[in-house]
Image 1 (cartoon, rainbow, N blue to C red):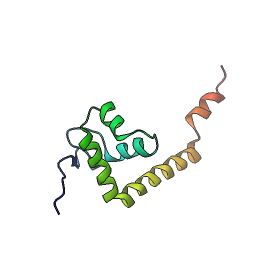
Image 2: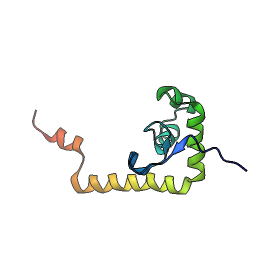
Image 3: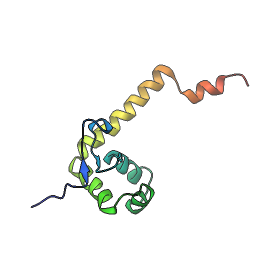
Image 4: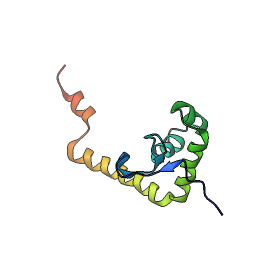
Length: 100
């Protein structure tokens, strides 16, 4: 079996080494987030970010090949945000506490 990998690259000097669509700064994780959480179609993502549809599909294929790792990174992000809110509170909450 041969794999098509020309659409997804990883470079330690760009996007913190995270896998991304070649020739862009569009990370695989970003594609996954917009598709799964924002309910964007793959076609919408391709059009909105001006990337080939095949590259968006490749990003999703990469995700499914590395699902556990990428899903864990979403959980890690959520935990980081939870900790920051617990330590510092919400910026929006602090702004609403200011006198007008």
